[in-house]
Length: 98
Image (cartoon, rainbow, N blue to C red; front, top):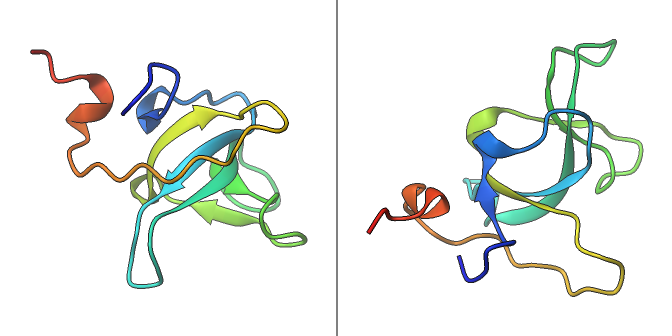
């Protein structure tokens, strides 16, 4: 991670409904990507968990915890879109401790 206010470990993400950017892990469906997500309590759409509705209008996407690598706060308007975090070692998100 290049900057202190960049990508952070998903375990530290706010679970209060705040919209954040997340890196969705690469899979057989495609490469890693960035999406806007928020933590949602259980409701008529399902159990509590990470959801996204901003990137797919009219479609609520539910993410399982293992699908998300990391998060960052939404950038200010006009900021360039960040690239997905490409690190392999999740410990890099906490710091190496060296």
